[in-house]
Length: 228
Image (cartoon, rainbow, N blue to C red; front, side, top):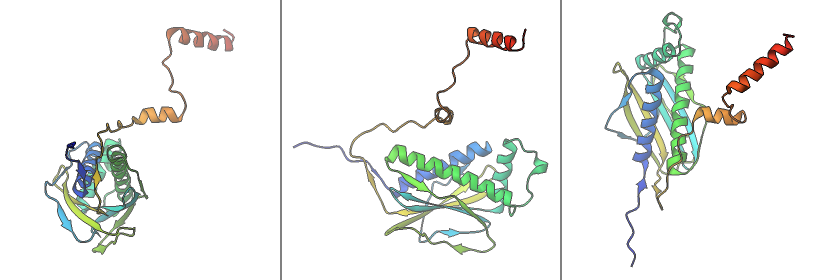
């Protein structure tokens, strides 16, 4: 009788850790400051959009779910300011309140990057595909209950606490199908794609560096076209 090694199983908690890592990775890169999350996770009954800024994204495909990030005003302004200053904007030109449309737009852009990083990892590591809608942002002054408007028969919901570099707090909530991924055989996940290589591929063959001979020929052609 043949013996088989125990199968590797990926469930809700492993998917949640992957999402938390994407949040930390994207926001750390965007703000150039460490973003960390709690070692404890809450099992919750429902997902909610809460003050001061609530962002959410629905996804579907291999499994369905909803991602929510609830930012306090202080956390949103810290992330917004660090991101925009890192992009070269002067502090004097920044929005002064988290209720500004500019702050909400930046939070939505970062949310889109987070979910994009997460779905990319799902493609590579779980070998299934997810599609997402555009992030939606709401500036809130009271608690709003958001139900998951998707086909989930046995939803599971979790909440994780995140901390910014200044110890401002925001919360990630995830609601997904109750699902498990079981590895049937070993495989090597695809490498993370290089954005520059993808752009070159989309625009045709990547340009080759000019040799000295090529540069000399181009210079001669230019001089001839000028009558020199």
